[in-house]
Length: 234
Ligand SMILES: N[C@@H](CCC(=O)N[C@@H](CS)C(=O)NCC(=O)O)C(=O)O
Image 1: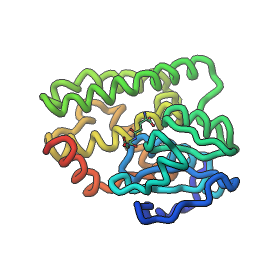
Image 2: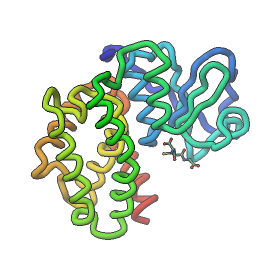
Image 3: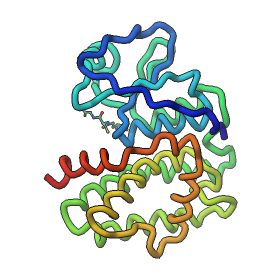
Image 4: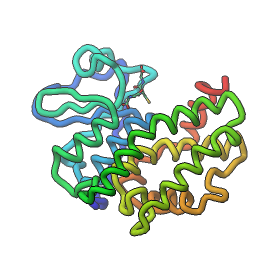
């Protein structure tokens, strides 16, 4: 996996930032540093070694440039990818698109059993995240126990590596930015370690943290927790 390029985080563009020269042949990935959906596409770009091929364009979603909605992505969300004269969105579609349409190591195995399980895990991720997010209004530790046990169990499916399909893949990328945030929130606000009694999940997180292409995308803890407080606990 391509890992070694050091990525400097460019400053986020705001409402006073000049429009970019859109559709000039540059491939651009629009993200927000706090957004777990955008982070999926960013990790995929890094892990394929596309730092020089896909320019990272961070947007400040709290003060976004009006040209983003008008000229780039009418849905006004991140992530979006400007590529070959088109703009594509939806993080789970984008990670597949980046994997399939750019050079670099494949992030989805060819083995049919692994592909099938990978599809299953990717199709489950929205159920997982919405279950966890909705638990924040109730008793998160108790209400999410089965959801984390499901992941622990899934991590036992293949034994040729610590990830869902053995090696790090799109299936892990679908989850990792969310688990990162959920782990922070559970530890900070609910004094709970989501990996307690779940050794495979603990190893998965530990091993993901060794992947440079992911490490470079990790959210700023203080900034995220502050934003979380405003959104979920206010
Ligand atoms: N389903 C979309 C969700 C993207 C999304 O909701 N992104 C948030 C930031 S985390 C966003 O852009 N929100 C801006 C808005 O809704 O105005 C995906 O997977 O890409």
